[in-house]
Length: 137
Image 1 (cartoon, one colour):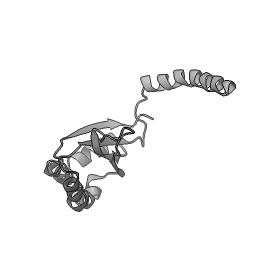
Image 2: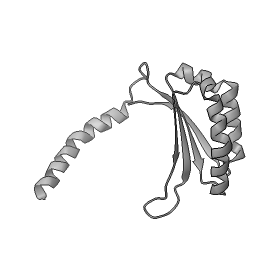
Image 3: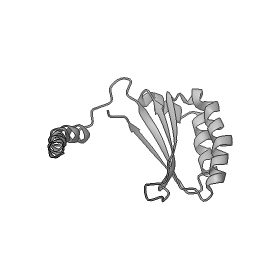
Image 4: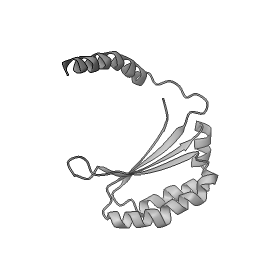
C-alpha cells in the first residue's frame, strides 16, 4: 500500500504543473470550438411549479426556436443534493452551444432567442444568472 501511495503522489506531482499551465493560459478559440451561453437557475420557491412550467412551456418554446437560434447542442442539467443532503445552490443549468462566436451572436439576436430569454422570469422564481464564453479545451 505504501508503494501505491508513492506512485500516486509522484503522478500527481508530474501532472499538476501541466494541468496548472494549461488552465493558466487558455488557448484562443480554434475553428469549430464551441461558444456557450450557460443559464444557471437558483433554487426556485416552488420546485414542482418550476418543473411543470419548464417541461410544459419553456423547453417546448426553446425547441420551437432552436433551428432559428442555431444552437449545435443543448444540455439541461438538474442538480442533485450534495453529500450532506442539502440542496445545491444552483437548481438547474441550461448549456447552449454554437460552433462560433459569430453564430452565437446571430442566434442571440433572433426573435426566437429573445422570446425564450424573455420567458425565463416567468418560472425562475429563485433568480438566475446568464454566462457567455468559449470552450478552451
